[in-house]
Image (cartoon, rainbow, N blue to C red; front, top):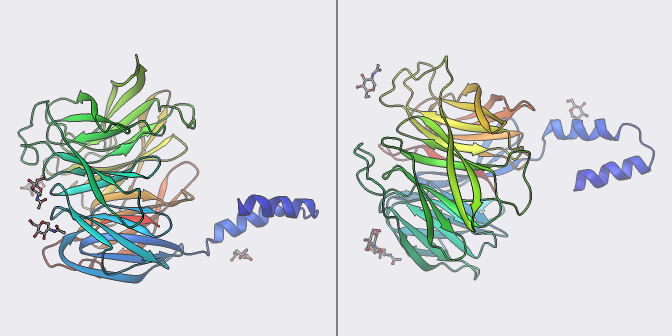
Length: 390
Ligand SMILES: *[C@@H]1O[C@H](CO)[C@@H](O)[C@H](O)[C@H]1NC(C)=O
Ligand SMILES: *[C@@H]1O[C@H](CO)[C@@H](O)[C@H](O)[C@H]1NC(C)=O
Ligand SMILES: *[C@@H]1O[C@H](CO)[C@@H](O)[C@H](O)[C@H]1NC(C)=O
Ligand SMILES: *[C@@H]1O[C@H](CO)[C@@H](O)[C@H](O)[C@H]1NC(C)=O
């Protein structure tokens, strides 16, 4: 907005090189971004100026793990604690998280993701620990009220060690705001949760030993405000595949239909250790073309990586991959301008936090890292599990 009006102003003043001035200002990236980072036993904030991460605050919370957080303007930060039943609400002031939560309420055990409804009056949390979905009323500032708990049912519980029960891993709101897609890693299923009634409207089977974990929506031909997406892609932690579904309204009900299964690894770059490999995050860029998946525990000598896929003609194709400089990239997020992709390497390795520069082609180049040792607080805990601009 600001840049657009500057451009118009300069143009109307007869300045010939308005475009190039704006481009060079953008390229310099001098305005530091504020980031919130969740790690075992601590919530931290950093600034990132395009070259360096600088820690600006740290909330120590021994035994807790804020492995997912969402921000609501102007100052509310909602955080899970995957080690207990608590969902918390913190204040953020001047890019720093205030040490004491404003609210902390028990819901399901082991919640690992949070997502707002479109109006941000409700917050949906998914429990890996109990296989339930918590719906919170957050319509009143600084308050957190448990509104509803939904049990995931049906499907066949898998036999892999990380399955054995329902495990609600993530809730992602579709771009029309009509429903959430909820991968259940335990039951090899994706559930659709209506975003008004908070009732499950469908369950889709992905097949045994797939372990759907995190996903994202895609719209062929570009995002259309208010419209249903055309596709949903989900990364499967056990099979190390992306399953792609078409999304359609069938007689007033949203339905997913399987269209493609593709490895999360490139054809020439399989994991050194197929036993431990466990795909993690899946992230869709707003251009509806670039899809990023983090490949964890690959056993590769160079560490783990982020794979880049291109969505075209209704299909996903592996394009390239970028090493994260560390181990177990649990979470990926895009900067607001989408020129930077952040990554949180959760396991003990050289790099903890990572920033990749994202080219127009979608290809990633690692340009900044924060050492893992600077972030890991608990000796047997985990380092950064979550990073996002606030
Ligand atoms: C951006 O950086 C270039 C090269 O360092 C410099 O010449 C230019 O003046 C900078 N532009 C702004 C707007 O800071
Ligand atoms: C949450 O539950 C735990 C375990 O039962 C209990 O110790 C704690 O006091 C509860 N916290 C709140 C805020 O209700
Ligand atoms: C914690 O979560 C478990 C499983 O969701 C539930 O059975 C238990 O009642 C919860 N405890 C509290 C204090 O809310
Ligand atoms: C793969 O990882 C497992 C578990 O850590 C280990 O036992 C096995 O030796 C590894 N295999 C290879 C080929 O590295």
